[in-house]
Image (cartoon, rainbow, N blue to C red):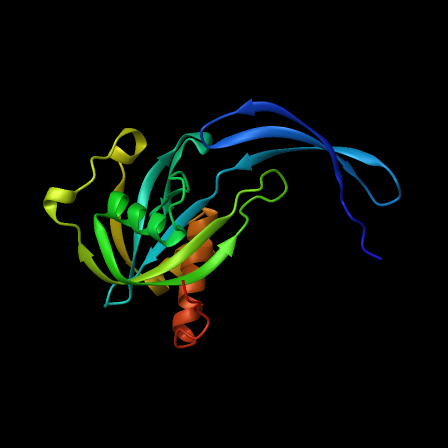
Length: 192
């Protein structure tokens, strides 16, 4: 028999732009109640941008919580009310990589840290890439101002993921999923 985990109450400890921190009192199997602390996250999208030569666009970006520069995909928050997720992905690709894409396919969904956050990230595969017109380029600020872009062969990116050089969860999942989809002639891809 499956237990229904019922939330009896919620206390909000922090409310922010990107996430809130809460404690839920939740019923447990056997009749007990347990406190569960977690972040309620707005969610995010990311893009595996793959060019005609089979290279993926990776970013190098500083991330303060881990105090280092990481390999990442173009990605960002779902922070525009009513914006379709694929449009959010296209916006992030333009803002962080100065690229547009003719085609988007749904690649993979992931919960990067379900033990402490409800964050969900949807990753898209973008192909048919072209440069954003110079007049429409996004002005990057804060950490984004220092990000750099690098074209990496998809198989090399997979090796970077497996060697521990890529540690960003969305980047790991996106690179490995794109390689698998490519190896299966793109059949696992889902429609947007």
